[in-house]
Length: 392
Image (cartoon, rainbow, N blue to C red; front, side):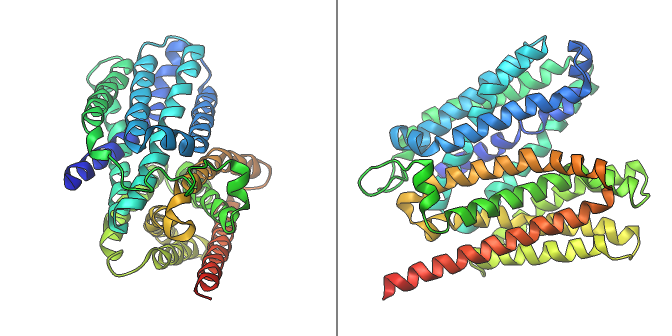
């Protein structure tokens, strides 16, 4: 039964990644059909992001009331409805309206699944599950591309993904008996109290881990959005090569997480985070140093490999850092911090580079990395102090 549930969770992580890149891959066609400016995709993206932040912050309350299995099934079902809604939309307003359940569903399933896996499975599964997210995020644009190449309307791409989500929703509903929790699964305090955002913020180490997630996701998304532009504008790399290596960054993240699952058998979560941060430093040095374009391209892939273990290891360490009874509340806030970093910092860098230069790209990433390093080490000291106080 445990193995069957784990297989279902793996499918859910693939499903979680499938819709994430659809808007970007389909928007060049969508905006022409509905008569919207190319830049308006940012508004749809922001609505989705706000939805994910809200549902992440509500994840403890929902999981306490319904359990992780029901929250996951309902969230995937909401995403499924939103995908079908997108496929029948013929105006920008309709896309914005359907973006609301799109974001709410994504944030709910993300927080619930991450906490459930952190509580019940070994660290290697967290790495491999996030690798599966990368598989889904890669497959989504591929499916949309195949639909468009076959001469079908862009809406068919959304419907294909929608039917896949519908199938997963049915599987999740049928699997609900498997989710019957051990004590503490619902992630509330020992007296059943659901922690508010203010109460979470007062927990020692909570602010540090929030900053850590904010900086990590800001770094990852900034690389994904601006690496190709940096290579073309600053390094003089041709656009085709830059685009290819930009995509290899995410491939590096996905492959790195597959490899990280095996390394977690030797290293604990804290060492995995530090290992990833060290590899990111090495990749950024190749971007900084005047070693030629080949070194810069290699550095981009190395940054992706370094990013691989950081996010899943930080999530998996949450019950150990803060206690199983508070992990759902903490993970919900972590997810919200991650989405805020993803939503705000890449556009901020775009604004900054317009007023200065794209040459600041590696400097900007280094600042985010330093903040992430400092916040993670502060978190580790807080946890060590807490454990020392308990032993005393």
